[in-house]
Amino acid sequence: MSSDTNEDLRLQVLRRYDILDTAPEETFDRLTRIVAAALRVPIAAVTLVDDHRQWFKSRIGLAATETPRSASFCAHTMLEHGAMVVTDATQDLRFDSNPLVVGDPHIRFYAGYPVVSSDGAALGAVCAIDTAPRDISQQELGLLKDLAALVNEQLELRRLASIDGLTGALRRKTFFDMCERELLLGRRSKSASSCLMIDADHFKSINDQYGHDVGDQVLKALVDTLKSGLRATDIVGRLGGEEFGIFLPCTDLAGCVDVAERLRGMVEGLAIATARVPVTISMGAAEAMSGEDVLSVFHRADTALLNAKRSGRNRIVTDSISDTRAAM
Image: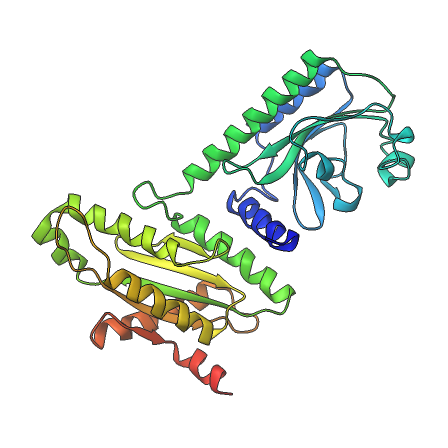
């Protein structure tokens, strides 16, 4: 897998924590205060690193809320398997000309420990900074490691709070927030974005005939099947009882329909272990237009989904506006 692909996946994982540019939170500020007090440093931070910047979820001793990634010590730390320590940045060839060393805040000492996702993706770091050269003890490094682990735990708690407990799909608000960000990122890179609205066909009948336990199994198996047919960068959300949405970055309408047809076939062949339950899905597809927000795109896909259900179910219908655009 190429380094570019790895970085794309890392950024996707970071965005799914839905934490960038959020307000200060006492949980993270408390950890930063502990770093500053325990290591006796004037500057401490919890940082997250995206494609172009280092953003501070929590900070002490810094006025800025972010710095360029190119100047970030934590961008180096997050790629380590353990702590990174710089006892005197003016004597380190990696950092001696760094603008944060030669200028404000005049970093000399730095110690950081990586913050990683549950599946090992590098997200950022917990760091301690001083304006004078110094050493750090193994006990202090151990404390920094423990605090980084606590940041990891807080991030996982945030993520779990945004996930539907039954299916593992994203909850509605988190889903649309993430889709909106991906839509804006796609526009910045001039790439197409598309979405699917999905409804489990005759789901009430499944609940009535087989019971709600089997109905729950169907929904869980449905989402697992959808995820298995998607890329790591695609986003799946549960929007209602048996209604789901999928956002497909870097995908035009034709590509979206290809994905939808593959998913429809995979679901049609789905086998539920505890009962012979026939499962199919209806789908509506739409491609985002210039300047359109994500709710509008999904509204058009939802209208197409309604047409799919009215015309027989177990099929894909494309939005008429997307059809017209694709034909131009």
